[in-house]
Image (cartoon, rainbow, N blue to C red):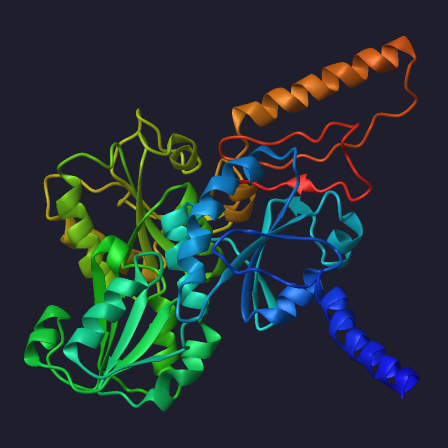
Length: 435
C-alpha cells in the first residue's frame, strides 16, 4: 500500500504544483498600478481582462517618458470602475518581434483592447481627460435614462470631448444602430420619462426629439424628425461638429472625416470683443445651412493657416470664403469681407446666396491641403534635428568614412520630436509619435 499511497501523494502534488508554475507568468495583480507586459504574457493579459489599455513604448522616447506619470495617475481610477479598464505597457523596442506582428510602428502607440478587439487611441493623454475618454469605450452603445437625475448624471459623466445625443421619447431601437456605428465619435442615450424642467434646460418643447449637445462649445441642436429613411443619421453626422468651429491645430483634425465644404471667416484676433456678434450671426446661418460647416480663425492665433487663404494682418478683415478642405477655396464676387457698416447676418446670407448661385471665383490656397497642412506641422526642434543630420552625413561622406547615409525616420510634432540615434535603432525602426 505504501507505493500506492506514495503515487497518490505524487499525483496530488503535481496537480497542485504544475498549474501554479504554468500560471505564474500569466498571474496578474490588479492593484491600480500599470501592468508591465512581455511577449510571453501579452496574449494572456488581453484574454484575461475585458478592457486593456496598452502603451507600446520605447525607453528612449521622450514622449513616452512624459506619458508615464499620466498613466500612473489614471490607472487606479480606471481599475475601480464598475467595468474596470486595466492600463498596461509593453516595451516595443525590446520585444520588437511582437511589435512588428501587431504593426506597431511609432512610439508611443496607444491601443485599447475591448474584449480582445484592438482600436488605436488618439484621444487626450492628461490623466483626468484620459479617464473620461476611456470610460466611454466601456459604456453601453446607448444608455437608457429613467429619470431627470439619470439625464443629469449622463451629461456630466460624458464630459466635454464628445458630442452628446439624447433621444427624448424615442425608442431605443431607433438609435441603437447609430450608437454602435458611431461609438467612437459620440455618446448616445434615450430618456423615457422626464419633467418639463429637463425640457426647458435642453431647449426642446415636444417629444419625440433628438437633442445634440456640444458641452465644450455650449452648443445644442434639436431634431424633431422624420426619424426614418436616413434623416436621423444625417442629423447625427452633421452634429459631430458644433455649429461654428474655431479653427486651431486640434480642431483641424476633426475635419478629416467630414466631406462638407466650410464657410470660413478669417478675423484679426479671436479675442476681440466684436467677435461675439459675428459668431452669433454665423450660428444663425449654420442652422439654416447644415450642408456646410461654419468656422472662424484668427490671424493672431493661427497666422500660418490664415495666410494660406491670402489673409494676413495687412489684408482687409474679416474675410469670408468657402473652402473645399483641399487645395481650393471660393470667393463670392463683390463680397470678400464682412464690414461693420451693415448687419453681419445680412452680409453672410448674401454671401451664401451668391455662393449657391455660382457667382464665385475659385482660387488655390497658398499652402498644402488639409491633410498636407496637418502633416506639415513640424516643430522647430524637428527642423534642427534634420539640419543637424544632413550636416553630419555630409561631413562623414566628405571624410570618406561612410558609403551610404543611415536611414533615420522622424515624424512631425507640434512641439517636440524624438530622434532615434543610429546605435539605438532596432530592426523595427519605429518613428516617434507626435503628442
